[in-house]
Length: 212
Image (cartoon, rainbow, N blue to C red):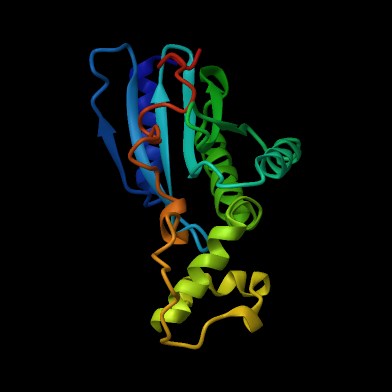
Protein backbone atom coordinates (compact mmCIF):
# COMPACT_ATOMS: atom_id res chain seq x y z
CA UNK A 1 0.00 0.00 0.00
CA UNK A 2 1.38 3.41 -0.96
CA UNK A 3 1.86 6.16 1.60
CA UNK A 4 -0.93 8.19 -0.01
CA UNK A 5 -3.32 5.22 0.13
CA UNK A 6 -2.39 4.62 3.77
CA UNK A 7 -3.18 8.23 4.69
CA UNK A 8 -6.50 8.01 2.85
CA UNK A 9 -7.40 4.79 4.71
CA UNK A 10 -6.57 6.38 8.07
CA UNK A 11 -8.55 9.52 7.32
CA UNK A 12 -11.56 7.55 6.06
CA UNK A 13 -11.51 5.22 9.07
CA UNK A 14 -11.26 8.07 11.58
CA UNK A 15 -13.97 10.08 9.82
CA UNK A 16 -16.38 7.13 9.68
CA UNK A 17 -15.87 6.56 13.42
CA UNK A 18 -16.36 10.28 14.13
CA UNK A 19 -12.87 10.66 15.60
CA UNK A 20 -11.61 14.19 15.08
CA UNK A 21 -8.07 14.51 13.78
CA UNK A 22 -5.70 17.02 12.27
CA UNK A 23 -2.72 16.84 9.92
CA UNK A 24 0.72 17.88 11.19
CA UNK A 25 3.39 19.40 8.98
CA UNK A 26 6.02 16.75 8.34
CA UNK A 27 8.76 19.35 8.06
CA UNK A 28 9.91 17.98 4.73
CA UNK A 29 10.48 14.43 5.97
CA UNK A 30 9.16 11.49 4.01
CA UNK A 31 6.28 10.90 6.40
CA UNK A 32 2.74 12.11 7.07
CA UNK A 33 1.41 12.80 10.56
CA UNK A 34 -2.13 12.66 11.92
CA UNK A 35 -2.97 13.79 15.46
CA UNK A 36 -6.14 12.72 17.26
CA UNK A 37 -7.60 12.66 20.75
CA UNK A 38 -9.40 9.70 22.30
CA UNK A 39 -11.82 10.65 25.13
CA UNK A 40 -11.67 8.60 28.32
CA UNK A 41 -13.09 8.44 31.83
CA UNK A 42 -10.08 8.33 34.19
CA UNK A 43 -7.75 10.11 31.79
CA UNK A 44 -10.01 12.65 30.13
CA UNK A 45 -8.21 12.54 26.79
CA UNK A 46 -5.35 10.59 25.23
CA UNK A 47 -3.44 12.32 22.45
CA UNK A 48 -2.33 9.94 19.69
CA UNK A 49 0.16 10.59 16.90
CA UNK A 50 -0.05 8.43 13.77
CA UNK A 51 3.04 8.67 11.57
CA UNK A 52 2.74 7.21 8.07
CA UNK A 53 6.00 6.09 6.47
CA UNK A 54 6.95 3.96 3.52
CA UNK A 55 6.34 0.65 5.26
CA UNK A 56 3.43 1.29 7.61
CA UNK A 57 2.16 3.40 10.49
CA UNK A 58 3.84 4.28 13.77
CA UNK A 59 1.43 4.74 16.70
CA UNK A 60 2.40 6.89 19.67
CA UNK A 61 0.30 8.07 22.63
CA UNK A 62 1.26 10.12 25.67
CA UNK A 63 0.06 8.51 28.92
CA UNK A 64 1.51 10.45 31.85
CA UNK A 65 4.47 12.43 33.08
CA UNK A 66 7.58 11.03 34.74
CA UNK A 67 6.64 9.54 38.14
CA UNK A 68 7.62 11.52 41.23
CA UNK A 69 8.54 8.40 43.21
CA UNK A 70 8.65 4.59 43.27
CA UNK A 71 10.04 4.37 39.75
CA UNK A 72 10.83 0.68 40.18
CA UNK A 73 7.20 -0.04 41.06
CA UNK A 74 5.94 1.93 38.08
CA UNK A 75 8.32 0.21 35.64
CA UNK A 76 7.45 -3.21 37.03
CA UNK A 77 3.77 -2.48 36.43
CA UNK A 78 4.44 -1.28 32.87
CA UNK A 79 6.53 -4.34 31.98
CA UNK A 80 3.90 -6.72 33.31
CA UNK A 81 1.20 -4.85 31.38
CA UNK A 82 3.22 -5.10 28.17
CA UNK A 83 2.69 -8.87 28.21
CA UNK A 84 -1.06 -8.34 27.79
CA UNK A 85 -1.14 -5.48 25.30
CA UNK A 86 -1.95 -5.88 21.60
CA UNK A 87 0.07 -4.00 19.00
CA UNK A 88 1.53 -1.39 21.37
CA UNK A 89 3.84 -1.37 24.38
CA UNK A 90 4.72 1.00 27.18
CA UNK A 91 7.98 2.94 26.96
CA UNK A 92 9.51 6.13 28.36
CA UNK A 93 11.11 9.11 26.63
CA UNK A 94 14.38 10.83 27.52
CA UNK A 95 12.73 12.75 30.37
CA UNK A 96 10.99 9.68 31.82
CA UNK A 97 7.47 10.51 30.59
CA UNK A 98 5.38 7.42 29.82
CA UNK A 99 4.08 6.57 26.33
CA UNK A 100 2.42 3.77 24.42
CA UNK A 101 4.10 3.04 21.08
CA UNK A 102 3.59 0.52 18.30
CA UNK A 103 3.77 -0.08 14.57
CA UNK A 104 1.29 -1.40 12.02
CA UNK A 105 2.87 -2.91 8.92
CA UNK A 106 1.42 -1.67 5.65
CA UNK A 107 0.49 -5.15 4.44
CA UNK A 108 -1.82 -5.77 7.43
CA UNK A 109 -3.28 -2.27 7.68
CA UNK A 110 -7.09 -2.33 7.55
CA UNK A 111 -9.88 -0.31 9.12
CA UNK A 112 -10.45 -3.16 11.57
CA UNK A 113 -6.77 -3.22 12.58
CA UNK A 114 -6.78 0.54 13.12
CA UNK A 115 -9.88 0.12 15.30
CA UNK A 116 -8.25 -2.60 17.33
CA UNK A 117 -5.01 -0.70 17.91
CA UNK A 118 -6.73 2.55 18.89
CA UNK A 119 -9.05 0.57 21.15
CA UNK A 120 -6.04 -0.97 22.86
CA UNK A 121 -4.41 2.44 23.27
CA UNK A 122 -7.52 3.84 24.92
CA UNK A 123 -8.08 0.78 27.13
CA UNK A 124 -4.50 0.93 28.42
CA UNK A 125 -4.05 4.69 28.78
CA UNK A 126 -7.45 5.23 30.40
CA UNK A 127 -7.60 1.99 32.36
CA UNK A 128 -4.06 2.18 33.79
CA UNK A 129 -3.99 5.91 34.47
CA UNK A 130 -5.20 5.90 38.09
CA UNK A 131 -3.00 2.93 38.95
CA UNK A 132 0.07 4.75 37.61
CA UNK A 133 -0.84 7.78 39.71
CA UNK A 134 -1.29 5.67 42.84
CA UNK A 135 2.12 4.03 42.38
CA UNK A 136 4.15 6.96 41.12
CA UNK A 137 2.43 10.04 42.58
CA UNK A 138 1.25 8.76 45.98
CA UNK A 139 2.84 11.54 48.02
CA UNK A 140 1.70 14.27 45.62
CA UNK A 141 -1.89 13.02 45.78
CA UNK A 142 -1.89 13.12 49.58
CA UNK A 143 -0.34 16.60 49.64
CA UNK A 144 -2.77 17.97 47.10
CA UNK A 145 -5.73 16.48 48.98
CA UNK A 146 -4.59 18.16 52.24
CA UNK A 147 -3.89 21.44 50.42
CA UNK A 148 -7.36 21.50 48.87
CA UNK A 149 -9.04 20.66 52.19
CA UNK A 150 -7.11 23.47 53.88
CA UNK A 151 -8.38 25.93 51.28
CA UNK A 152 -11.90 24.54 51.08
CA UNK A 153 -11.45 23.60 47.42
CA UNK A 154 -13.25 20.86 45.50
CA UNK A 155 -11.93 17.29 45.75
CA UNK A 156 -14.03 16.05 42.83
CA UNK A 157 -11.20 14.90 40.56
CA UNK A 158 -9.34 13.32 43.49
CA UNK A 159 -12.16 11.16 44.83
CA UNK A 160 -10.83 8.08 43.02
CA UNK A 161 -7.86 8.23 45.42
CA UNK A 162 -9.83 8.68 48.63
CA UNK A 163 -8.69 5.25 49.85
CA UNK A 164 -5.10 6.57 49.98
CA UNK A 165 -5.90 9.39 52.40
CA UNK A 166 -5.37 9.32 56.17
CA UNK A 167 -8.27 11.59 57.05
CA UNK A 168 -7.28 11.84 60.71
CA UNK A 169 -4.18 13.76 59.68
CA UNK A 170 -6.04 16.28 57.51
CA UNK A 171 -6.38 19.95 58.49
CA UNK A 172 -9.75 21.41 59.33
CA UNK A 173 -11.61 22.55 56.19
CA UNK A 174 -10.70 26.12 55.34
CA UNK A 175 -7.78 26.24 57.81
CA UNK A 176 -4.52 27.06 55.98
CA UNK A 177 -1.56 24.75 56.42
CA UNK A 178 1.41 26.54 58.04
CA UNK A 179 3.92 27.41 55.34
CA UNK A 180 2.19 25.10 52.87
CA UNK A 181 2.10 26.02 49.19
CA UNK A 182 0.33 24.30 46.33
CA UNK A 183 2.05 20.95 45.55
CA UNK A 184 4.49 21.09 42.64
CA UNK A 185 2.74 18.16 40.96
CA UNK A 186 -1.03 18.41 40.49
CA UNK A 187 -3.13 15.39 39.54
CA UNK A 188 -4.81 17.59 36.94
CA UNK A 189 -1.47 18.07 35.15
CA UNK A 190 0.00 14.56 35.27
CA UNK A 191 -1.94 13.43 32.19
CA UNK A 192 -0.64 16.33 30.07
CA UNK A 193 2.88 16.60 28.60
CA UNK A 194 5.14 18.95 30.55
CA UNK A 195 6.88 21.92 28.97
CA UNK A 196 10.26 20.25 29.34
CA UNK A 197 9.06 16.84 28.22
CA UNK A 198 8.67 15.57 24.69
CA UNK A 199 5.05 15.86 23.63
CA UNK A 200 3.20 13.08 21.89
CA UNK A 201 3.73 14.96 18.64
CA UNK A 202 7.49 15.19 19.09
CA UNK A 203 8.38 11.51 19.40
CA UNK A 204 8.79 9.37 22.50
CA UNK A 205 12.11 7.79 21.74
CA UNK A 206 13.76 9.86 19.07
CA UNK A 207 13.18 7.17 16.45
CA UNK A 208 13.00 7.91 12.76
CA UNK A 209 9.74 9.22 11.34
CA UNK A 210 9.65 6.19 9.08
CA UNK A 211 7.79 3.38 10.92
CA UNK A 212 9.48 0.70 8.78
